[in-house]
Amino acid sequence: MLLKALQRATPGFGPISSRAVHNYCVDPSLGLNPEQKEIQKLAKDFARNELYPTMAEFDEKEELPHAALKKAGELGFGAIYCKEEHGGTGLSRVDASVIFEQLAAGCTSTAAYMSIHNMCAWMIDTYGSEELKEKYISRMAAFDYLGSYCLTEPDSGSDAASLRTTARREGEYYIVNGSKAFISGSGDSKVYLVMMRHEGQPGPRGIFCLLIEDGTPGFHLGKKEKKLGWCTQPTRILTFEDCRVPVSNQIGGNNQGFNIAMAGINGGRVNIASCSLGAAQMSLDLAISHLKVRKQFNKTLSEFQWNQFKLAEIAAKLVSSRLMVRNAAEHLHQKTVHTAPICAMAKLHATDNCIQVVDQALQMHGGYGFLKDYPLQQYLRDCRAHQIIEGSNEIMRMIVSRDLLTNETWA
Image (cartoon, rainbow, N blue to C red; front, side, top):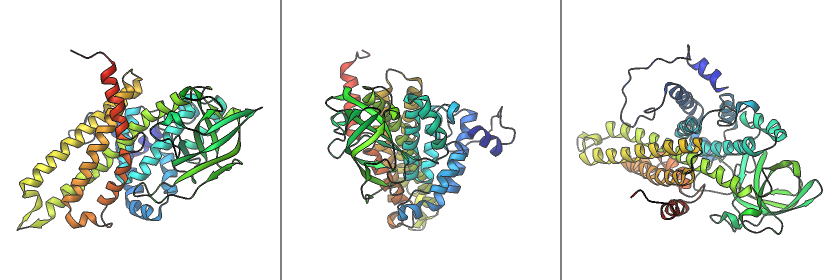
């Protein structure tokens, strides 16, 4: 799908000639190979044409832009790093990071949901049975079926291993009871990947994963939450009351659920950090444009050294964040032993620094940045979630420090 889209967008796509183009030092295409640059351009064009013009509208309506999602599916953005065998696009984790960054520039909230949806498709592709892959991946790739990842509960957030949702087996069914909280996409999603524990099996090893479809008897949706940001994606509490789920819907082994959840979250951290990059890049660009035209004291704001120095500072934060995120994406793709701490470090650095980029860009707009007619406030609200989601940044610090203190040092 994506290859065909590239061929349509780029006549003669194949051996791509190098171009003598010089852009500024925060150009997000720096370091990419020719094919990745074309993928990036495809995502950028889609975001600018299909997401950015209606970003504020869907934020206010608190709805996902379903028509845009369907178009994204046609481009191959619904199962980006799933294998092509069952309808995935078959790209790398670095490619996915590049795509999510561009999508987030168009609408950070929607891009973040798309990243979660992709994580769900990947879990089925990696750990699901052939029957589940055949049934769901192509539909998720097209955004015909939307997916939600269900780990967090009302009483277990950072301490995910303490989750209480349980299942007991009765013949060819599991009977599920419990609840999940802060579930992105809930209410719109068809596919829910739910982490739960075998009844009577405490700790991480008691956890496994079930795919539960919307409409399954005993599966109930709570009210749609009102949120500061991420408003385009619905969020609800889910409740399971004697919910009967076929054993054939199990994802992975009986005691594999916690490892599946953590593997998914490693990727989710890179994806969410990539969304922060997109919001920061767009905010920086908007600030540069504003500083060049806005005048005070008979000169443009760009002529004030304070603003020049602040631009340099936030540019450094953006570029360093991008380098860390793409490095983490490569570790993730190669499945190195350092994947977990590197992904945590990248998520910590990028989400903390990129929201500072957005905040400074808003400050440079003065009162205009505070208006909802301008997009800076929406980027700021949406990026705030990134310091919490996929493991809070406090947990990221714990993961990195544990690696530092329990392994051999360089010296």
